[in-house]
Length: 290
Image (tube, rainbow, N blue to C red; front, side, top):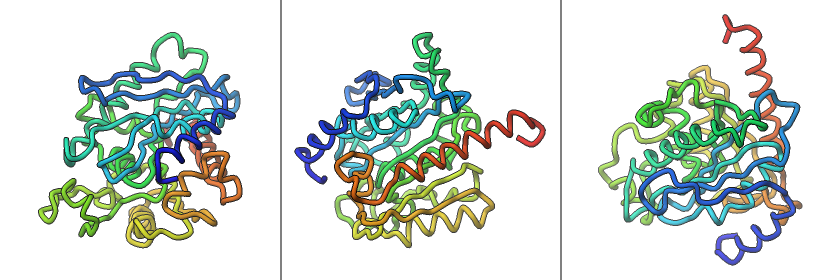
């Protein structure tokens, strides 16, 4: 799963999950700033609005490309969700917080893109679920929990974010031991309030935090469990689920058909998305409680 050749195999097999794919939609002047969009073949009639997921890939903020995660986009689209997989600039070209600004810009552009008449039949949701793996889960969590980034991109945070899904996320990584990651956050002079756990009490964004059974790269206790506890302590909705038989890498791989023998990430994701839909329906029918 770690190498490009393995990802090529995973992506090739993932074509069993049918979706309409729109590649390389530019959202900035930099040549890397593009996203791929995966659309369900038909609107899911169970949802009043087709859910929208924005997925950020991992790679220690110094490697990775959206093209490697076709299997994620296709799988989520096959489940009935419009899915965007954006690129973001990487170290050494940039450091924190530039990749967060890129992520916010991709969401702002997607908002405009999905207003086009060609998407009318899908009736896209106006609130998005932000999702990521590893370093990408950090990006998703920061954008979901800290309103500064989306607000700076011209969006109203509260009406733009519906939920957070993190897989093996890096939410509380200081002090950084990984020498590849240290310069991304200007080690040892870390920027203040630059970790998702710093914002656990600031936004009531429902969160689903998926953890592998074991993780030698990102501590489950210091990251997933600590963020979950902080969110719950602040009265926010958070759920942790451990996926049997997985490690840091194979956790995201369970979205491909190749790792069908591992525990399922799609089941808790689907349940979470349905709970968000039901919550929105209740808020719409009882606006004074929403």
